[in-house]
Image 1 (cartoon, rainbow, N blue to C red):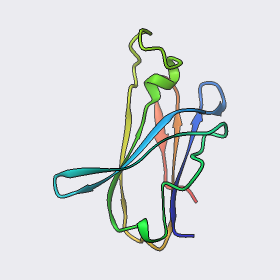
Image 2 (cartoon, helix red, strand yellow):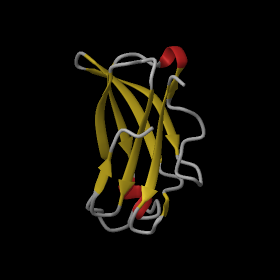
Image 3 (tube, rainbow, N blue to C red):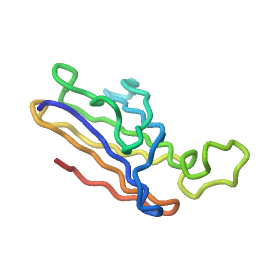
Length: 116
């Protein structure tokens, strides 16, 4: 089960956050390498693991969630959102393990944890 997954829940509405843009990058030294640029599905999950198998490497990663665009319905002329892009920087120490990094988000707050 070597993989990295995520799940986004819209806690303000009590539903999965569908069609939210999610990006995964690996940080090495002072550079950032974009690995995945995707969207969540109707269940608030990505259709495939963000990393799996040999792609899993120990190191520092960032997940970026475009929550501002999600909450304003993708309208570019909407009001400025309090939360725009939520960035979670985390480490993978055991590339043979399953890492699940969920995001619980509302227009004004968020939380995360290492899930299973």
